[in-house]
Image 1 (cartoon, chains in turn brown, cyan, purple, green):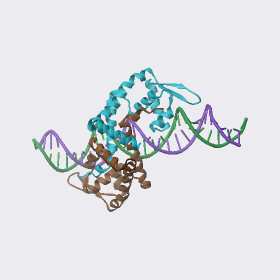
Image 2 (image 1 turned 135 degrees about the vertical axis):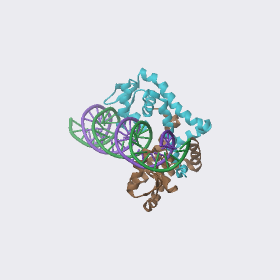
Image 3 (image 1 turned 180 degrees about the vertical axis):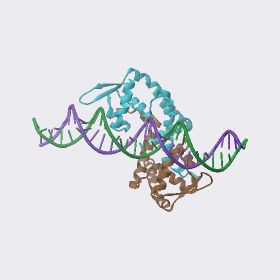
Image 4 (image 1 turned 90 degrees about the vertical axis):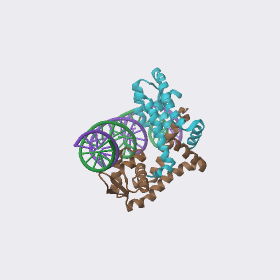
Length: 135
Length: 135
DNA sequence: AAATTATGCTATTGACCATAACACAGTGTC
DNA sequence: GACACTGTGTTATGGTCAATAGCATAATTT
């Protein structure tokens, strides 16, 4: 029973990625958040007043795919939208949004820890460097 | 415009994974193959007579999700199914299947090369080691 | 003024993953 | 032999996410 894909970096790449995502998504518990939502929240937190399209560019999410994400976040009352010039709508965290960031950050940290615990601090850091070179 | 996810290994992980997949899927050209199909083909090649469930276990694909994959491959005439004991069905490559493996391997190699070219031989190899430690 | 670009949005499609349930065959164990 | 248990193939269904095409509007550039 040989697995010929063991030799391929690409194989392990999707494997580890989905492993990390599973850990993160589980860490959200019954909050009903998915990882794209959390990523968007983090970007908004770091760039208050950012526009929906800019978030998409940063995260490589299509404009059209941003719509339901932002819609969900607004529905939950985690973000606030303020009309800017023209069609621009500046997005920021609402007070509830600020509050939820603790949970979100903890979840993403759980994913990081799951990886780091299997690699050690040094391995984790080299992995980070290598992956950054690719993306 | 700061991207707070730059610091997260998990972020780069899904990024690089989807980058690699894109390269691979493009390399299939108009063959109409998807990467799970190619992965299944490689496993069958390395383990003739293997069962559909075993492939799923090896690749972490649910039994139920194996059905359409195997169905597609059979429809293309790339695999052959031979009735075994009970409900067991042994799967092997057909002559056409053997022939197509060249293209499939080339595609997966293209993905590997895309990564390796950004990392160098040494970086590629350390990345391989690190990822194997996780999965 | 006209063309171009940016933004937000709708709608649709397709890939992939996940769960539940069913039917059937074998392998035990009592 | 009757029984539970496990493995296999299958159907059905829903959810998440990515990708494409197209539309309307507004700002910017020429």
